[in-house]
Length: 396
Length: 176
Image (cartoon, rainbow over all chains, first blue to last red; front, side, top):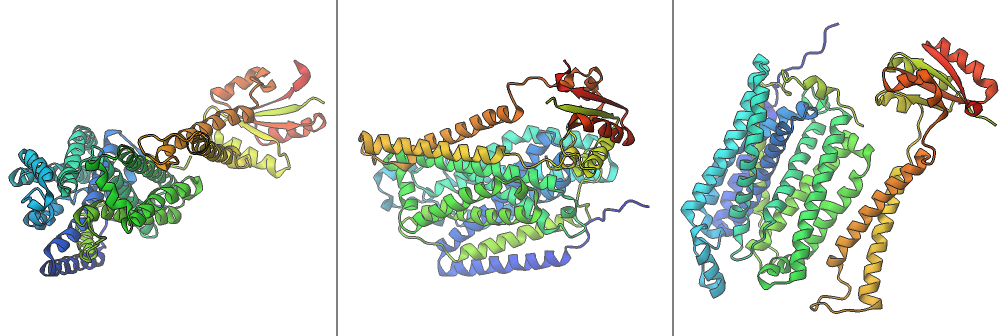
């Protein structure tokens, strides 16, 4: 009897074309929206952009953490993580509309007198950091870091497929461990630059951690959904065992708790202090309209998944865990919208329709790019020394 | 009446699991396994029921959290109302940290306490440890143990030998 042969990933052409087409149509619709209302279209675009970039970076951080901790059980997941993390350069291209439309989104670019004297003083004080050239230089630095780490980790892994050379494992670990501080810092400053600076004066020191925890949950959920969706195909999903789902489910559970802890800490400290420059952020989000969304987030992003993921049986079942993960991907969208839109439109509840088109557009292109990178490669790192160990993982 | 255990040593985890399944098929239900490392298959072969620990822990956690919340609400808003900086007397956000902490503490204490009870804590030893060769259970021996009445012991001994046990011993609780 010959052992079953793992095929290279040759299909996906159809899925690639469909998602690329969806991407182009979505972005074209968003561009049309810009003729109606530039600010609203850009706000919707920022939502789609940060949602998918967050997933990509969440996966990059997950991959680098696995390497840095010399984890053996996730080897079978790694190729999926690698291609997702390696599409970061696509977002450099997608960043162009934001760079062009900065002045419509960020109050510090051209502060209007309506902001009031105090806000103008604060913005003037921050001009040394928040100015257009430095903003663009920083963005370039972020993309350089993410692109380099993601591309090298993928390239070295594919090289190992061909040669089986163990030094690539060592190099991946060194690069991951060495680059994690840089990845953490670039992610953190990215959230301050592209998301928090939508506010003229408000600031929070845990904002970056809040965005990170949401994105990390999203990244984990994405891997789970991808695995559960391909479990009846000859690709990577078919190699995942209940043991992998149990471990992924446990990580998801942990970071859902982490998200809740961070979101709650920020809220409680600001609520109890009730300082005017801090609490305004929550006043917008706790009043009618966004107040209901806050409740949905609390229940949907924490209480319900927390209760479900307590069960060990559920975490080991691909379909059930896949459903929870899909729910978390939806909740992550609510979280990102909740962070962005009340800052952009504090007067009323505004969710521009371009948020949907941009979400489909950026998402379609991201999925197409990841599928394009996967073509002709093995669905798992076949020459990794720990692949066999990973394939034998069982639930505890 | 004294309890008896019949012990049989097997040379591999697979042999042990097969033997446990065969013993259960023969109708012996009070089985146990002693292995040098955890053998996952034995859980199923022993027919272990679900542990009471998770539901007990959940109940303790929820109970502790509820107690903490009620205690804070009662002391701050009902029994001794105290206005702190204009915050509401019954203020949910500031009650939650204590609620969370006491929930976690109660759950953790329940795990500790319930494990002690389920382990049979005051007993720190067991008659089977008196068998000299049983020490191989921490080295390379895979032991099956069957709790039986005195008159059934010969039948179990024969069954264990038939299943390929390297050696078989009978332990009598009152013998020492």
